[in-house]
Length: 120
Image (tube, rainbow, N blue to C red; front, side, top):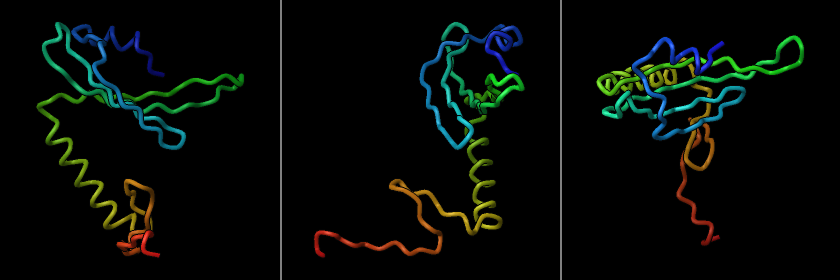
């Protein structure tokens, strides 16, 4: 199991100063997108953490966490790879899964309409 204290010992040159954070809850998992500063505050990097709550045998809860460190020189390649994989999966493997819109979910085959409810 991941613990912040342990990670710092493996990466002594990193400072844990959070600049900005965005949690994304997705079912049983929460993803954290954290912008952090390097030691000396002279640069920034992104950490992406997956956190999943699990119940121990004694009834207590703990969290499994997995973390990725993403540096600015890798942003474009990471984004391109992620977009390509998601597009492939949507086109070839997940045709029946609805797409997310800003205001909710819609089926991929459902046409968009420009209905003005004030006219009705």
